[in-house]
Length: 378
Length: 146
Image 1: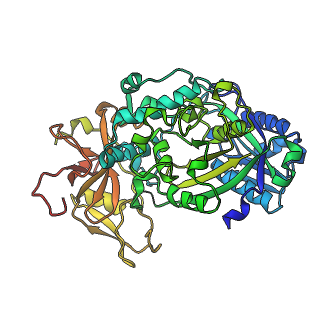
Image 2 (image 1 turned 60 degrees about the horizontal axis):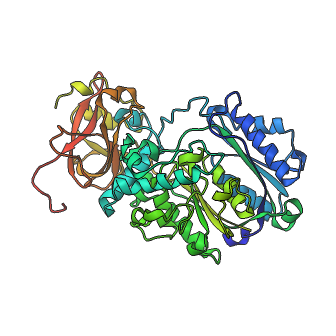
Image 3 (image 1 turned 180 degrees about the vertical axis):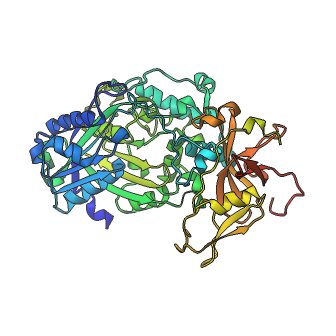
């Protein structure tokens, strides 16, 4: 049962590189840089690793054999994965089963310096039908989603601005964030459309950077770090039906994911001090708030008004500024920040959440198809 | 419909997942893929039935009518051929038979595209001897389902 994994694994080390534009370094260089930091944080050497999980990365980076060779190691368990959720699943299961003692998880990308244009969507349509009809960019999914929300629930464009505004306030206080300027309700509505109804500031930026973490057996975790972060509970779900799913517009894989998560542990949404969402596009925050039970389905665009998801609000969402304003690191940056928040070591005191004991982080691959959510605690 | 602004839009590549769809479109016929084992009706392109995994797919003439399930407007042309059409519509069409498909809704601007709007199929030439289904707002007699 998934609850058998609860609290078996802990994050004992995290590492990050500078973010944004880091020219002259490949994605692998950045992933390995981050791993060096994480190993140092955990107080172990690469040779102590018996698990290695590397995420594929733009431009042919993140190949397991290439990275593994550069690390010079002989792990029992070695995987290439497509997103952080898969990395966490494997690492937690390996450690909980006693197959591995120390698993390294790593991701690095140079897609900004190497100009990844994100032409493809998250749909698996086949042939060249995307091109035939001018469908492009993964933001199309979120744009369809918000347009549907506007019809179904009366959401307005102005209401969506609250997400980017909240993220900008958090990013302004984050030395690692790429965009530190503030967005206001006025500047939000003046931002140009990219894929209407979404505007430029509703999109994640593209960035270079690397993140890594070390996951170990919880029983040994405090030998390695004085403030290990426990993976309290975890849930994963995939839904490959895409447009064939009746609830196609509202991130359907999150619903059973959330049900399983909450029923596998003793916590509920109100126990979470913060929520991290992989916000490639601002509407993703709304889906997560509803699907994980922080507010009723169809109400998130109202619920977020009045500063509710800002740092000082009832439920801070992405206290690091998210992918919207901090960095485009497909959720790895959220785990990194969550660990520091829980340890009490957020790099900027104004961004440190008081009494941070439990956070929920949700991540995804392909927007609708794959979801992983974890509850981290101390 | 004035096809000039849409001249030069991409031509569909034919493969077994969409060939009957595109070839019928060139003859002005709208077809949908149907699984002859379990009866599931899908939207193209289709390689196998997504309900029972059968590859016994037949392409059957269909109404070509439905509603707009959602729509977006591109203000940037990742697909270069669409640059002169910015902002241009991409919609999810939900056919009366059930399945959904991504396409374009073409309008003359006199009526906005809205979720729930009725649409019907039209055919747009794309390259030599090729055509693809696109959709136009359908102001025909109101249906009971509306």
